Image (tube, rainbow, N blue to C red; front, side, top):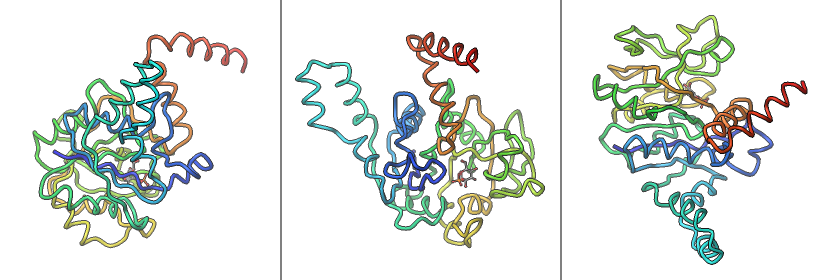
Length: 283
Ligand code: G1P
């Protein structure tokens, strides 16, 4: 299976940090956001990745490329740990890139993957969203896909204030945490939302999505919406997953993700906790 990572969005919500760098390259504790996404793909057993980029996204390609000069210098200075780390990033997976020519929505970005993906189901992971879980989120989705066979979407229960920013699922519960999707609504008004189950940015899609993307009209925001194309597919499933998801395009979630990721390191945790205790006392 192949994975597609759309990373062409502007990052407006994170200005000015994203004025001259892609939001996907913002560090979460010690790694750029998109490295977590690529690691999720690899840890789910997929090693063929297509990243959809756009204007101003070249540092993403540089990050996953081999850096001869840096490696040479690290080797000369005997910095073996850093050298290994840097080499592992460029050896992680086969990564190809295609540029979305015009900002015309997530659906349009996914259309750019048609030639690379062909007639096979594929995974989609939004490049500005990271997940933290024991079993990678995409692997959990694949398990549901293997059982039911249709396009499968990861969802989470949203608090009211977030509903208007997400695609929302209207579904029928099939078994624990798995819904058959009856309808999807992209960014509804709170009063029109069919549930509080929000699409989180992880999908397994069957290849008929490419035809559906050609058939649909522009939706919310005048853009081609992936949600609208999935709505045209038969047999779509949605599942909550075990773990946490962070939308890095949102400054507060980015900050929380950095703290949470730092806390996963045994050698860093005590210092962070100490710091937070001091801050709590201070405020
Ligand atoms: C996209 C999808 C939306 C989904 C969201 C998750 O919206 O269109 O359905 O809920 O990602 O982050 P965007 O955030 O690109 O506007």
